[in-house]
Image: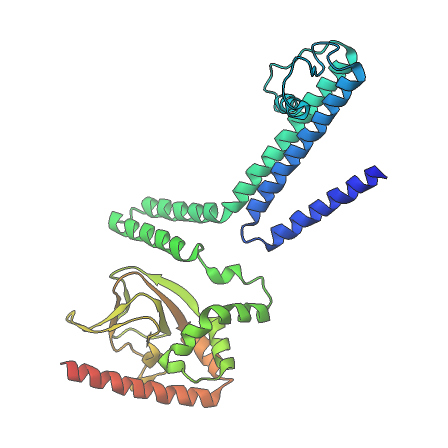
Length: 337
């Protein structure tokens, strides 16, 4: 009956740790704690075994068994200390005096070596798993930089690539955040992106008061891109196939002679003129340069047109709104001159 109770308690503890692992933000911490508890429990079992044999042979009957007369303090603590030394093969243990003691110590050492090697291996795997994302990212960075060296790419460009990798890790912890959620069902992925990006997209002047379902479709098609200080995001005359939404940072609208015409901050949109074919074509009408580190969302013309097929009335509204924004920007540029 007692054995059944112990088994039920063990099973309950396993289920408890499994649920904590699933609920915790840092599951590897729970796994380390669980492994340490397993180690302490095994030492406790060996402690009880050593004391039970000592009682069986007689406490203090020889130099190997526990002697309460020569050892001060708690008997459990002293036996636990001896069990820990034996299980971890530290050495300097009492020498067995008979076959039972030799047999016990042999089983003790073998189980200690096997079990503790297994548990320590689990702890190593836990920490490796916790750092696996960082390790994979570092490998990709090292491989890219090594490839650039093999191609004899100029050092300043190699430093720029290294800077991009470092900043991208600080911001996203991955090379492509969309790939991490591709395994999720479409509905769940939509809900996830909406919870993260909907507020920002809804504040964009071009998309204000748009249908929520339209914004939901567009959110799924947004691609995050990072630009470094001084990077030109687009140049005058280029064929425009993308629209940009600033998430973090600032960008400068620059004339052909290098004059800063305007500075755009978080929530602003640029590239929509070429995307919608305003001003008589899809050529870029301005240079846009990243002022510092900039995080932007990119929406391609293909994805935009595909989404607009389902919302023809919204497309007409957006095109009219974009024309009004274009006229407003032109007036502001003229007044500044």
